[in-house]
Image (cartoon, rainbow, N blue to C red):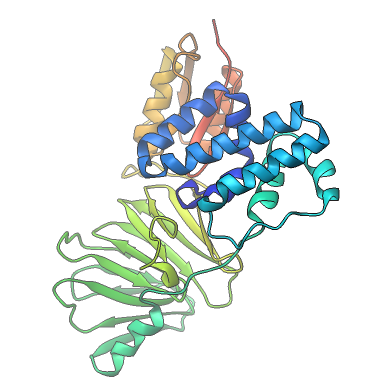
Length: 364
């Protein structure tokens, strides 16, 4: 469940699903990446460079001698150096070449990653943080709510937004929101239902991330002692950015979440990762009607699920054109429904980057 919008070249090289697409060109993978590139056109250059590099390394691995392979890798290293901010190229010891490069798929890519780029894991520190926002409380009037009870505590904000504050959690907010922005501080867990106001974005600051919305409902879990910080969206659209990187390289440190998606910020890695929540629910339909199909094209089934759950299901429409389904889908969890559908058409599903990818073969 990767977040490709944050990837640079070295990340693509180390990603097994990406390498599989480049080297095998399977229909479902083609459909996923074509759709992803349409939605992320600004990343096309990086993807193209990574694809070329993987193809060249794969060719070198299979068709060159050891000596020719080493020379080719040096050449690739020199030509790609401008594509990364890592320190200057240092040739690894020869013993790394044979055991790693003789692998396939992701192993080929990982070998290229370490040979050409080294292991750059640096972080950035800039932009507004929860600490900086907290400093404003020294001069402005802020209200602090602490929930020491076992039950959830309801909080109403000046703009009409409502919050359910979980136990052992703390919320701070100004007595009066300024016109252009609505900012609050959270330590712990809370569910937000934000009043829509396009002229005044609503921002929730924790020690690690900043969550920005115009009007929606979502949950943030950010206890100081937890290894991860989590944002889960129920309705609407939410933007999540790392607090230390909000002002620098936003395309690498910012994610957009849709209903039934979540982002997890791993504090050790200092990275955001997007996925689906554990149990996606029908959006705006707590008691959604059963979906009944009789000899229906499987494409119609997937379209109905997409509409009901507001999740993206990607598949090869031409490949599955002959697949039909007779079934009644009721209150079963989404993943159970997908498992039943895939079993009926001899397919399987995979979740990548908050989207559902269907892998199957023709039913004709």
